[in-house]
View (cartoon, helix red, strand yellow):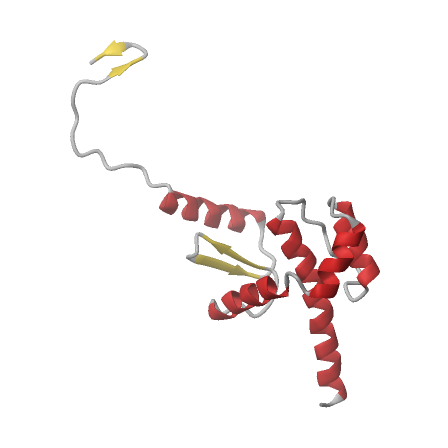
Length: 138
């Protein structure tokens, strides 16, 4: 394996560890921490982040040492690959719409509205009879 491939493998392994911390946060419904500028290759940094969201330091070290969430991360990566996702950020809405890359707020809101309206449809009125409301019955 060449130097470039070895470096890529080390970066992937470091990213894998950070993704495991995120998986813990998601599995335990904890606040997700911003990983920008964090040295994700350093276990100490990941333990610090995990403790910031309420995970005990000892538990965080045990999870990282045992790869306890590695399978969850690999499953998520496989799902992403099956959807054609090749980078981050990537947003999926309603298992139907995807946005790749940084997007303006307006674009995110447009897709959110579209996905919501499709998953929360307004019922079709197929008949109308006597109804009562705040002003009485009609």
